[in-house]
Length: 279
Image (cartoon, rainbow, N blue to C red; front, side, top):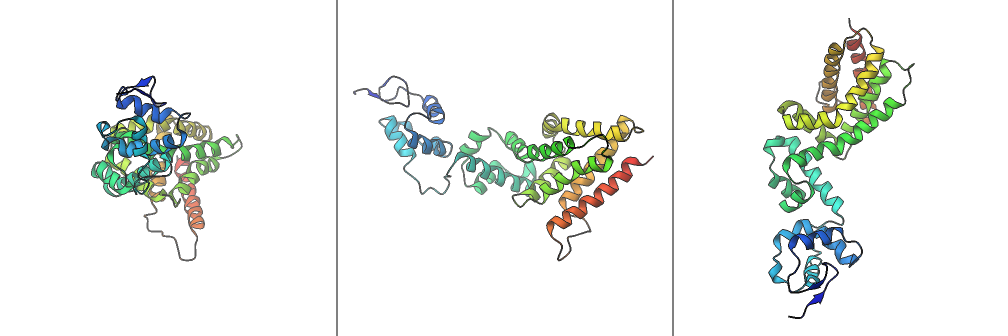
């Protein structure tokens, strides 16, 4: 058979000189060759590559044409980012309702309308998927918290530090794009005592609590370190409960979400100040 040249793999091609790995790598990384088919090929790769046998294709060019030939597949997305976000959103909702152990990857793929290969491609494992569900929310939340903390000066009191810690969290809980589901996921993380998840949260976000602890300690010089951390732990628990909005006090008719959230933050800050300042 006459060799052919293809920009997808180096050198002249005999029928199958490129491995699956070489071809997949080229499709995912090469932005200079066959731009349009490659763009579509990248989108379809995670969802279709595992179902396609190389032996059915006589050349790489026909392989790419097959990848882009099924635009009506309902599982396809306009960008790889929307596929990833769809998986994260489905996982967040299922973890909130069924817990980490109770929600399987197959249930996640069914809800997200992708196949298992897409989850493996984007996340690698269920544990990594769980971590990314937290990272997607907590990166933004803690960036907001630290930004608010950074605005404070030495003259700002305990109430201002608590506001920087509490208000961004309550804003997250009321976000329409899954904020309520994430709060339930967060509550499950506290309840299920997953040591790997606890370690992940500590390694990635423990520095945020430490920075706030420094600010609290400066305003509460009479508290020892251990007592301060006990009290901050209790404040964090009360905040999680307030974020869940599952208490006796429900939003009244005629009160907006914003007003209800502000009221909850004001009451929690007032309560936390009293607890932190108690002898």
